Amino acid sequence: MRKILVTSALVYANGPLHLGHILEQIQTDIWVRFQKLQGHDCLYICGDDAHGTPIMISAQKQNISPEQLIAETKTSHEKDSAGFLISFDNYYTTHSPENLELTKKVYESLLKNDDIETKTINQAFDEDAKMFLPDRYIKGTCPRCNTPDQNGDNCENCGATYSPTDLINPISTISGKPPTQKSSEHYFFRLDKYTSILQAWGKESLQPEIVNKLNEWFEQGLKPWDISRDAPYFGFEIPNKPGKYFYVWLDAPIGYMASLQNLSAQRKIDVDAYWQPNSPTELYHFVGKDIIYFHALFWPAILESAKLRKPTAIFTHGYLTINGQKMSKSRGTFILASDYLKYLNPEYLRYYLAAKLNSGIDDIDLNFDDFVKRNNSDLVGKVVNIASRLAGFINKNFDGMLAPTLAVPELFAEGPKLAEKISEAYETRAFSNAVRLIMQLADLTNKYIDSQKPWNLAKQNPNDPAVQNICTMGINMYRLLILFLKPILPVLAVNSEAFLQISPLTWEDHKIPLLNHKISEFKPLIQRIEPKTIGPLRP
Image (cartoon, rainbow, N blue to C red):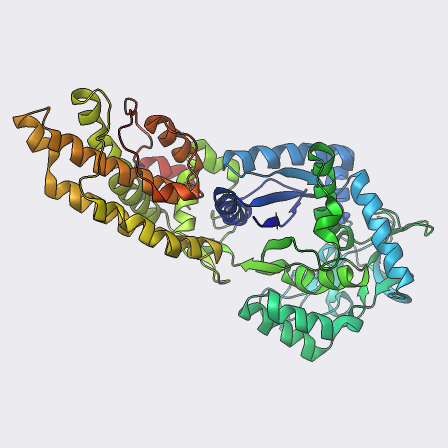
């Protein structure tokens, strides 16, 4: 039995979840459920990233405290994730006593390792707001292409990256006035010191596309990383440095450790067993490609310096697009998780995304026409239709009893034959391959049922043993399909287990048929999607 710790990226506590967040959580959740289905000790932890200037400013605008804002946001995030059947073992927050303690310990380790240096730097300062301005709070004209209203660190038009001081006519987005320049002492982590260690680790632990991207950064040369921010700031104050705070990206990933420590108080988990160097446990992070810089460079370097274990692997995914377009509020392609849940079953999205997800970092497109067709064709037409067509014959004519033997053992044997390939597909996050193989099995099953036509036999003799044998065969194939789909469709699996009157399915159950067993009356398990229900969500 493997001991595995899995995380998806902490969600920033400054707004509601959208379907891009849900893509990552669904990908992670399917992988975790598969591990648990196989009997492994697999923990899934996550939480809210609750620090930073945007949270402080957002709270000020709402005339509430940052603590109230992040508490309300966390409740909202947990509700939406639960709506999509995400099975966290613990969902926590980086604004916690556990994270404060751990962040201080890590910082002390970095100091002892001589990995912290100080520099005086010039920054944009808003005289009205009396605060230094993060890049995102400065707008101006791009110094390369002269496009106005661009961010302080990059241009959306030409893709240029630059310093806020390079902007033409910079303006503070807080006061609307030009910022001044002011110097301040900051604390830097010596990231460049760990270049060779990060290169070696990355080759073993990252996808090829991410390794190539990191090589570009290595060729440019890594630089010391600023881990401090000046007051006013919502976060953890640096010990013995009044008015100086840890940058959110220092304490955010340490929040993974804090979430596990919080869980350990409930379950008596040996936290050290997961984080000590050379630990036999496995550690996996699921993240989007937009934050790989922090997870594949800063985080493992910090862990190395603090003499803690590095991740076994980081699994990176692409963005979610809607009908081929980037998610955008102005284009109407920005869909909140809560809005989806008002109209549609979460398992439709879980299945649709699984049918498209693989181990790469390509973007995943949610096309609503395809979404309707695929769910109706596969889940309703190919899978649940098997049970709905056959259960009535068993219940009405054979007192709900399945036959004592399999009529076509070689058909059932196709399940165990495919089990290893399906297992490999789940393990490697090639969920689209798993879905393809499962639907192959569904097609074989439906072809068998259509060829045997039990409904015709039942018309001639409702109690014909051949009818019981054919239906038993089909019900057993349905059970296999549900077992293989269980990581993707947990509610359909639970309801199917109730219909079959069996204990929760485990992976080993694919080897043994269900015979001489009484099933219950069939009740609808999933409904067809009517295109009109999609209407409010369409761009």
